[in-house]
Length: 486
Ligand SMILES: *Cc1c(COP(=O)(O)O)cnc(C)c1O
Image 1 (tube, rainbow, N blue to C red):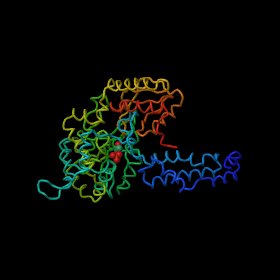
Image 2 (tube, protein in one colour; image 1 turned 60 degrees about the vertical axis):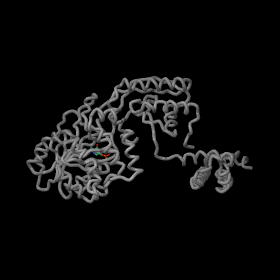
Image 3 (cartoon, rainbow, N blue to C red; image 1 turned 90 degrees about the vertical axis):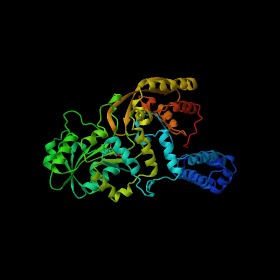
Image 4 (tube, rainbow, N blue to C red; image 1 turned 30 degrees about the horizontal axis):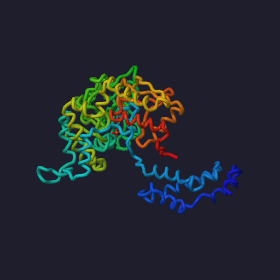
């Protein structure tokens, strides 16, 4: 009888009658719970999955989309339920393999931590700690004390504080030093960082008033000088992390701003954005001002991220003159932005590695990936290509080629890192289908499409991930991929 209706499908009337063929939730549940695979799955997940699938079918029928009556039979629905349940049981937040070549990829979690730091994180989470307990005196301590001295040793700063992220750092500094006052900034530095962090908007939230000076491409010291009034509370410099103004340009060096601030009795702040402790020109990159350079200029306060070029956990680091840092510490906003014990554990571990520059470069993944010589990256590409040719030769053409990696994270936007990877051209599916299938794996493999090839850049892939990537491709081409979407 269902078949008859399917045969004359098309008419809205007939379609509606199909609604009656949708099995009841209870009946589906009964059938499902008899299946071994379902054992141990929370009933709530099973129930909701069944309801969702049935609801989608109902909508499909009501929308007049073609629906075969057979597809509503329990036997046809069971595999769909199972697929949905499997998908729901997968953690939503999970590991991926970054084959994009973008090292500090904000969408893929920015910096990754070395095992030594992860060990400290694990311990901080599973054991009690002296988070706010002074082991010397046996009294209450400060969570910031664990990293403040280290930060000062590494950078030469007088004092420091760590908050949730750099956006929070900028906000709390502005709120502390400039609420109700005016902040002078060059028009060329009114940046927007991804995720709607815009200097003018953060400024407005802090209760400070923005005073733009100069032109988009050129700002001179006299522009700042002429804008200073009694209400000026701060001179601000923001690092143009994610763009460059090129051509006829001029920016006032930090030292000159500091000199002007000193003369006028106005504090000077720099938002460094990425904030690096090491001069990366060693690795063929453009020289960027380091945190130490900023501190040495005499700037009153400088802020930067923990998880960009520093290579640590998400955090906003504030360094500067003791008197200013003390005021920021006392700001009630500080409590709302404070870091947790995991951040603290990870950050201290990372900062300790910086006590020796070579150790930092070797052990901090973000730096190691930047420093990796192309020949080393190429070796991984060659190894991956060999595995793909061995396992998937019939399904996919592969060649090893030179490509371009990026530092990412709004750091050094113009800088290319020469890299190596593989370019894939599947025989029987399109490149975008292959890209999608790899993205839907249990451990998704994220590459990029360029000129009808899927590129997998090996600069951001660890040695022990190469075999996983090869295995993933084999799985996809064998049609065994556990497709997590219906
Ligand atoms: C990235 C960045 C921020 C924001 O830092 P988060 O740590 O992501 O909050 C602020 N200012 C500049 C200049 C940046 O580059």
